[in-house]
Image (cartoon, rainbow, N blue to C red):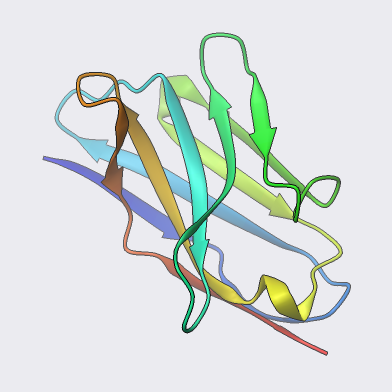
Length: 119
C-alpha cells in the first residue's frame, strides 16, 4: 500500500507564502512524476504543477506560473510546492499525486491539505 501524506497548509493573507510538502511511504515506491492538484469549494479538481524525476522537468498551470515552484527529492519520494504571492483564488484543498506508469494516470493521492488565502 502506498501512502501520500501532505503537510504545510494553513491560512495566510493575500501576498503571503506557504510551502506544502508531500511524502510517499509504503511498499517499494517509484514514480516517474509527481504532481499537485487543488480543489476549491464547488469546483472540480484542477492541475497545479508536476515534476518529472528523470530530468527534473516541471510544468505549471497558467494560473500559478511565476508564483508557485515545485521541487522534490526522488530518492526520498518527497515533493514540495512553494507558493508565493498567494491570492484569494488560490484558496482550495491541495492534493499530492503520483503517476502510475502501468495505468498512465495519477493513481495515488494524498488526503489533501487546506490552503486559505484571505484578502
